Length: 152
Ligand code: DQA
Image (cartoon, rainbow, N blue to C red; front, side, top):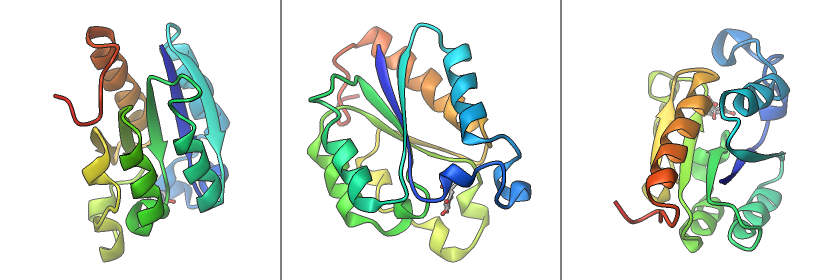
């Protein structure tokens, strides 16, 4: 099973920026913990601060043989219709992830432009949001390797 763990703008600063909100683990630490916790999953890790690069990466998901995506799109989650359209264009399941509890923060963070086209959302559990997403996605894929975003 091959999963893409993709992170958008400013997630490269995780562990350094606003640790009271996002925690003190770096993205590299979170990624290596993902690998350790899910040894049967082949991960590719990707981070970009650019909307276009993230759209390109999502577009490549099927061509590159990924079974699913764990995506923390950062602030793009709240307003990027380009990212939403890219997720809608692929059939593989994408799980939206946030470190912080976005519903307990500023008003603009309570809206997601991508939730509707994602398989599910995990928010507010710090680094455990990624692990919970990986758990759910890998369990579902074990049962149905051809899992689709819009199939229950
Ligand atoms: C975030 C929440 C977003 O609102 C914010 O813009 C981020 C990180 C999170 O992981 O909690 O960059 O996606």
